[in-house]
Image (cartoon, rainbow, N blue to C red; front, top):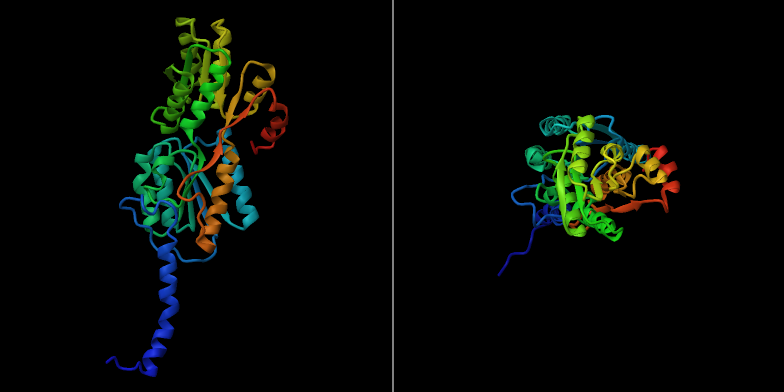
Length: 333
């Protein structure tokens, strides 16, 4: 027969019960990817205030695309009372160091784009192990949960590429040249793979975004060498203008389309020298992760149910370019 609990034992259990309950809640609310995170272990995250977030992207400083991402992150930070520290590096090794520095400073949250996931894995997992919630953006959708991130915000690159390829096929084009602007970028490879699937067949051309003059020369050379190419798809707004110039210089009648927006792309669509732009609405990729981290830090909320939050693909063409132009000018598209 069990003995009756003494008053002192009951008092001890009453003091421990809230802590046991809190531990149970934290264990149950570990966020999406809990079953797929491999060996990555998220350290306990204390519920509290999100005061600081480091955003570390793979784009070059001053890049028009990433400036919009930065604008979105800073706008969300201003509205939610969160200090946002934005840094970027084109070199994966340098990007990993920026992540390590943020972890060493003890930021409350981390936002990372992973164009080269393997190079960043150790740094991201260290952040997770330190109890810093991570949201990945733009690239690295497949690896996000595996590395322990609580969510991913971006565009499915293969789906976007497939949609772009299908649009060019529906426009009556027969041979597609897909221009990759950055070696080792998993997102760029996925875009071309999707475009090939949507179009039916495609050839790829590797150029270097850091050498735009050479990129233009290479595109011109490809068009001059194969006059049957009647469609060119670039994966970056800066390379799009170079492709338009290359088509003109080579006297090719190839239709040019691109991923991503900037003022040059808007002008080219308005002029009819670009058919469309695939818009992944990167302002959302800066803005939404700050909101997600705020909700997670204060209420252990997660979004997406273990799946990425999609920001695209949206399309900008002759039908809507005039309305979008003003938004591009203000830095939100």
